[in-house]
Picture 1 (cartoon, rainbow, N blue to C red):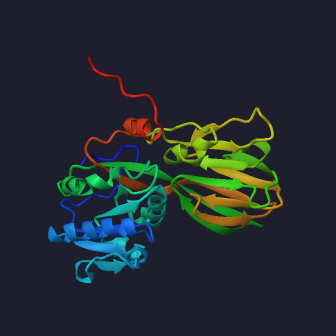
Picture 2 (cartoon, rainbow, N blue to C red):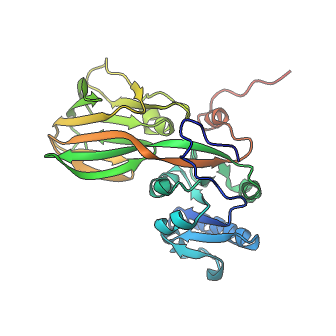
Length: 311
């Protein structure tokens, strides 16, 4: 296996090849996912690999997987036992799995059965062929940074979570602009009235941040993008800061403000609350199949110009 990027050498655990135990994680209540999961579980079992199935995934009513070939378990047990995890679904399924398994440094492989699939880069049709390459140690490991965020209210932390894509502070359900101050390493950057602000990792730069006219950041860029959402002042533009900078968003005025982690975990905020964000000590390890190219993925997913023909 190719070594992870040297800027964060501990982010991908030393993988055992061939892996002795692989976890399967899928989108809930999906017939198509259940079929793929059944096929993968049987294929891995027949090749002598131990199979773990995440407990919510295992609750699918139509998995079709014989109970004797896999073990149902939670994320903590997957973290302790799995040499790698295969995630079946779209980017949302990968985001959820990544937040749960980041502290355990379990390498993640994505089989795309969603729509875009920026993080799940293996097509379902190539799934079993890619398993051959995975078991042969031909995949490349890549580290992706996470954000750690906490809400501070009256001097104490009232909520916290991780994000692989982005942390978003926004106007909530009421729909009125919020007023907040933004600080970087304790230094005041600006006050803004807007729908909110996106704090994005390089991985998240092709997600919500991209839709808000934020920059696309290569995964090897060690930076964090601050992207205003519909700012009242037209001079406010995205700002890129270092991955070691501490970011703080203080709510000044808001009828209903909220913070979202990867669009999946949400907490309410109040005037006076501070959202503190920094790079997490944990990272996510992605395993990419032979021939993977980040730029080729961008061309395909964003429908950019065709690659020039070589003459």
